[in-house]
Image: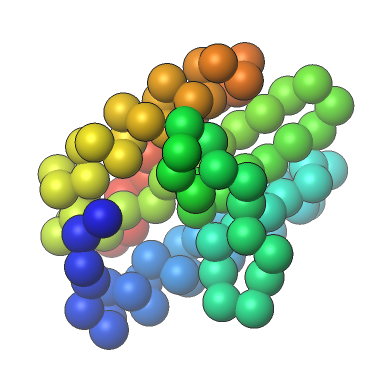
Length: 96
């Protein structure tokens, strides 16, 4: 996993919180990899930023900053394969 600076990490965490709120509003049960929250379960051996479940629907999201969007390809591949095995949908979002 690539390292972010303080500003990049703050942008990342804000986007994770925003996505968590988005899925909660839609009635999903959501786990987010944020300080002070219960961590999401591993998917493909990796803890994703967002793990959202509603009935049989599963959404896994990974949030990247412009500085990490190309450096975490191995992590993205593991998440993609793990999400597919679980019958879910993976999305990678880039912060601004």
